[in-house]
Length: 112
Image 1 (cartoon, helix red, strand yellow):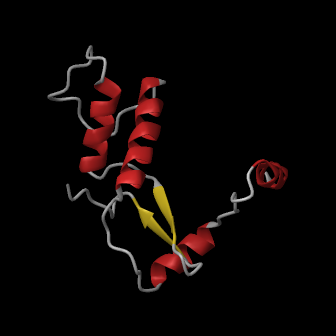
Image 2 (tube, one colour):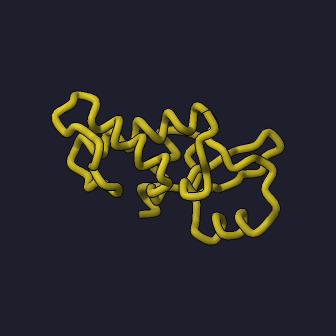
């Protein structure tokens, strides 16, 4: 695993190892940012989850009210999962002063 991390660093200089301990430590302190998605975080999460669903991942919400044969079904399902705060992902926010914050997608909400 460590070899994979090292090769990832060679591919992209911003790839950093993140441990569970560093995530837990960052969540203990007072956070600077607000618990809302930025449009960039939302779009990246939506695209990532829609791709996973299109490739056969199991939905985390009920399919009620969605048309499974619609071409935009994975996107609509991903939107529903985000709005219902069911996704088990961590958002990493890098701040200009060098500090990082980690937010669970279950803590963040959409304000638009």
